[in-house]
Image (cartoon, rainbow, N blue to C red):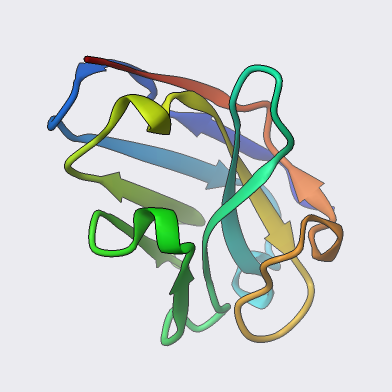
Length: 124
């Protein structure tokens, strides 16, 4: 069982940066791949980025490549999302999720545990 709590969301101007954090409970955090998804109003959940359990592999959606970076701290049971050059279209609720699968899962169905989400709003 893994419980996830996100933080770090807020309001930022276009071109600005935010860093999201997700803290996980449970002693098996290091066995899970971690991902970030987002959901904008009226839209489906969208995959953003994922990181393997070891931290050696990452994968970003095309929409955030070159702007967002995922990282993790397996000692502190945390995963981070550094978001730079933010755009108004990045506005969404961002969710941290944990997957028992290897590699860098990109499908929502690959993830078993989800946080409650944190709101990111980018003004133009």
